[in-house]
Amino acid sequence: MNSNDMLVISATCAFGLESILKSEIISLGYEITASGDGFASIHGGVYDAYKLNIWLRTANRVLIEVAEGATEDFDSLFDLARKTPWKDFLPSDAKFNVSRISLGKSAIHSKSDSQRIIKKAMVDSLKEGYNIASLDESGPEYNIIVHIVKDYCKLAIDTSHSSLHKRGYRLQAGQAPLKETLAAGIVSLSKFSGNCEFVDFMCGSGTIAIEAALAAKGMAPGANRRFAIDNWGILSSSQKADALESDVKKKLEYRILASDIDPRMVKLARENAARAGVEDDIMFQKLDFRDFKSRKKYGIVATNPPYGERISDGTSLRELYTKMGNVCSGLDGWSFFVLCSNPEFANCFSAKKPDRTRKLFNGDMACALYQYYGAPIKARKRS
Image (cartoon, rainbow, N blue to C red):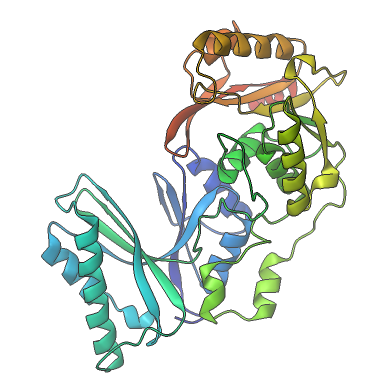
């Protein structure tokens, strides 16, 4: 595999974020060639895979697809992996592991056996392709991702290494951390661009506010971390610098507000923002959300309140959601985006139904993003 090869590159995401992921890819100048639940694909080279890693805010991983086919049993799985031209993708000294396997509704149900079979098939393929008797696996590392659903298998090479939600700025998190990629999705859905108030009055470790600042300033979410693709020796330093190049806003028109009743979380959020390079763009404050007020005619509240996993008393949760609604009712013209897994939230928050409810996942937890549109968003929806 070299920098000139044309590849099938897929970006994966959490269910519910597909439309945002596709919009991100298109905004980077690429054409979507395929998409489905949890992924979108393009045709491109290694440089493009690197650029997607750097810039996609809602993607979990960027993969290079290498083979796919029906796999009804272990023999057919071995044949698929054995016939794959791994020589075209991996150098002869590659260190490679079948690192992640997802199985669903298939006759094959053993991950460990699947790993062993695919590894053996890859070894046979590479030895034949390079006409060598053994593999020393002393070179760069390549992790293989396997996805088998309904007796159909896809084999891919992971270009990201660790999940892309690990931006590098959050060394510590709160009790129920929100993934950076999901926070970025919420920010995208809010249509925030830095030209109005943006508030998270239950900020926790600050993830929503930090992702809002990164997006509004045009800063690459992957700028402060490395990827598997960095270790392959395919891209030059000038190509990597070119992929990262952008026009970053020096200062936002409005500062973002991140507040929390817990001073320890406010301190943690400020430290995370400093590592992300956006500390000066966010105003941090110890504040009970019930005391929040604003004279601005329009703004956005985006927050992730307790669901019940952090507070065990169901009655207190209902009271919390009702008080949130009371605070927000005084912000006429504002928009509200609230992520919550508790089905009682909407009824407690407001007598008015959400303009939209989007199903999302916070890790493995099914949630809903309750969206209440203020005047500017409603105007855009009509146009």
